[in-house]
View 1 (tube, rainbow, N blue to C red):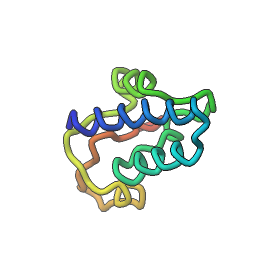
View 2: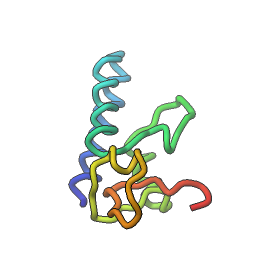
View 3: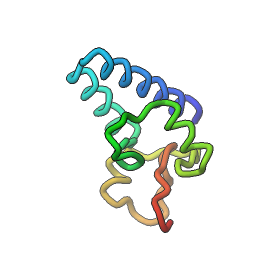
View 4: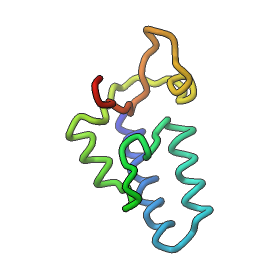
Length: 98
């Protein structure tokens, strides 16, 4: 469980570095990894274009907007409407009203 949270945090650090150095293709690859491997979409939490980083991620965990459950299913199953009773991934967005 902590491994996935840690890995997403590291990917966010690398993403910030890629953006800082103007490496658009590297940043795109890192975002793709977060989406495909972890089911983590920055746009679920931030649309400001100011940049989402590790501290933002950790703040959302502390606030309870991201819930670490310790269970995992493939990200695509969750995004495509997994059947009722399916376990949730490690990092799950808690959307407004839920």
